[in-house]
Length: 204
Image 1 (spheres, rainbow, N blue to C red):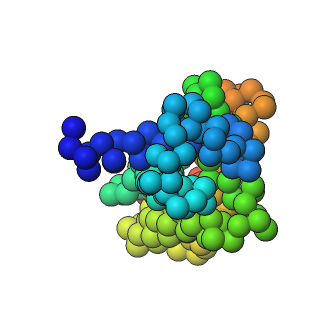
Image 2 (image 1 turned 45 degrees about the vertical axis):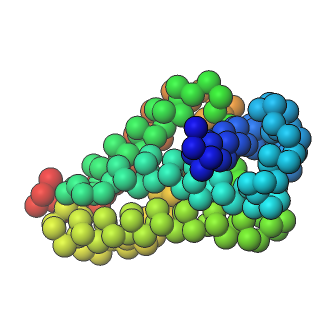
C-alpha cells in the first residue's frame, strides 16, 4: 500500500475508534492509551499523526462529526420547496436513526458541548460552529419559504431555527434513557403542530 494511503487509513482508524470511545465514555474519561489499546497501536503511531489528544479530537470534529451532522441534518433540508415539511421529515428521519441505534448516547455535538463547556474554549468553538452552520441553513430555508409563499411573513426565522435546534438536542437527550419510539412520536407530533402555525394558508 502507498505510504500516504497507509497513513490516511491509520488516521481514519484512529479517528473512528476515538469518536466511538469519546462518545460512549466522554473525552475526559477516555485516554489516548484506551484508544491505542483497542486498535493495538503504539503511542509512536499516534504521535506520528497527531500532536496531542486535543489536536486528535479537533481532527475528529473536522473529519467525522461535521460530516455526520451535515449528512443527517443539513444536506437533508437543502434544495427543497416547502421548508416546514422538509424540516419535519429531516428531524423525524434523524430521530428514527437514533431510535434504532443500540449504542445511542445522545446527540454527539450536544454531548461534547456540555462536556467541554468552561473547560476547553477552543474545542467548544469548533462545536458551536457546527450548530451555527445548521442554524444558518435553517434560517435560509425559512426565509426562502416566506418568499415562495409557504411560510407566513411575520415568522421570526432566527427564533424558529433556535427553537428547532434546542428542542432537537433536548429530545435526543431524553431518548437515551426513555422510550425512544414514544418520545420520537410525541416530539414529532408537537413539532408538526408548531410548524403548522406558520403555514401560509393560501398554500395550505
